[in-house]
Length: 208
Ligand code: ADP
Ligand code: TYD
Image (tube, rainbow, N blue to C red; front, side):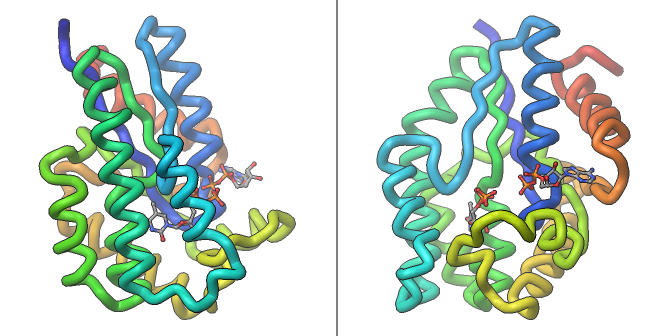
C-alpha cells in the first residue's frame, strides 16, 4: 500500500484554518482519498483531556514550561495513536495546528524557544508534515473575526503576546521554505482554497 500524506494548517486564531480544512477535506474526498481530520491540542482521548487543562481560563497559574510540556504531551500521543498509523495506511491526515504552533506560541510568544525545541524533539522525533499551510492574517484581523466566540486561556493573552506569535510564524516561514507555504489569508475563502488545492494537487501527484 502507498504511504499517505500529512498536511498541517497554522496561523493566528481566526485566520480561517477550520474553514479551509473543511473545504480541503471535501475536495480530497471527491477525488477518492481517505481523509482524517484532526487537531492539536487534542486528536485523541488523552489529548482532548490535556486540551481541557491547557485551555481552561481558570488555570491562570500554569507556568510556561508546564504549558509547553502539555502541548508536547498531547502531540506525542497524537502522533503515535493517530497520525503515523493513518499515514502508513495510505490516508491523508489534515491537522489543525502542529509543532509550529508550539514554536510560535510557546517559543516566541512565551520566550522559551530553546526549551520548546528540546521538548518537541522528543515528542515529534521525525514525524513532520509533508506540507504546512500558514494562513497569514495580522492578529487584529483574526481576533476581530472571532470576537463573538468565547475566549480560551491563550486567546485571552495580551495583544503583545499575539504580535510575538505572529512574528514567530514569519520567522518559521523564512526558516522552512521547502515545507511551509505562506498564504495571504485576507483574501476570499474561494481564492485561498484555490491556492491550497494547487499545492495539494502537486503533493499528491495530481499536478506537475
Ligand atoms: P480558525 O479555525 O483559524 O480559528 P475559522 O475558520 O474558524 O478560523 O474562521 C474564523 C471566522 O472567520 C469564521 O467566522 C469564518 O467564517 C471567518 N472566515 C474564514 N475565512 C475567511 C476569509 N477568507 N475572509 C473572511 N472571513 C473568513
Ligand atoms: P485551536 O484549537 O486553534 O483553538 P480554537 O478551537 O479556538 O480554534 O487552538 C487552541 C489554542 O492553543 C490556540 O490559541 C493556539 C494554542 N496552541 C499553542 O499555544 N501551542 C500549541 O502547540 C498548539 C497546538 C496550540
